[in-house]
Length: 233
Image 1 (tube, rainbow, N blue to C red):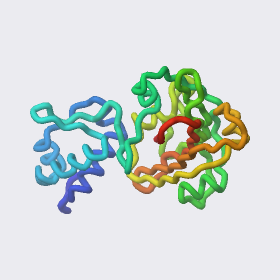
Image 2 (tube, rainbow, N blue to C red):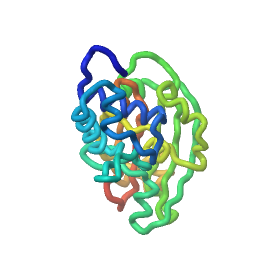
Image 3 (spheres, rainbow, N blue to C red):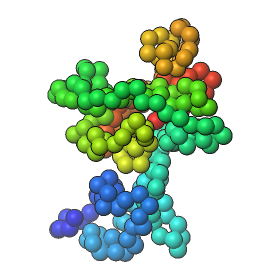
Image 4 (tube, rainbow, N blue to C red):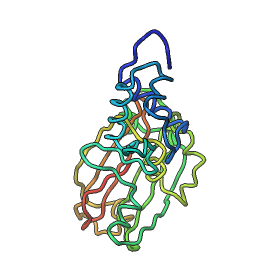
């Protein structure tokens, strides 16, 4: 990424983020020194430093004095709250985590999903339904669509053994977020998969993430009564 045009810190940030996403720099890797990156990108060291500060702020890298900069093994993307790996969130409460895949299939995207992605072009996406459990009790029911154009690797993931939430947090940190919070009365799939009585109030988080202008995933997560606010990538 060189040439006559002087790079801004946002250009450098986006380039390094792209290298993290395409696994040029994999989780846990130590990044080159700021001076070396600046030389390779044809920009000032202070420009790289500013870009790295922002990547650290959003949770993609971790910087330590005399320890250098590393890609986080478990990226924590920051919006107005941290978005954790659900398994770790449950385990940090001292509870036992489990996960159950309900269904996973490539399907045509319904209009509601196209609207959330901001797309008018029909297409297919991976539709995943799953339940996260805490101490063998339903915790979160997720209904998720994953764009297989921007995230084709998800099709090779064994989602029966590892949740889409965990894989996406580790491999597809986002740069843009849209989130909605609302409540619904339990019925249908929500009541069935969370094992609650019809009519009980449930918290819903509906979130869509992008990298640049390209959608990654949109998920509607419904939390069982009695649990604190949670979110998923």
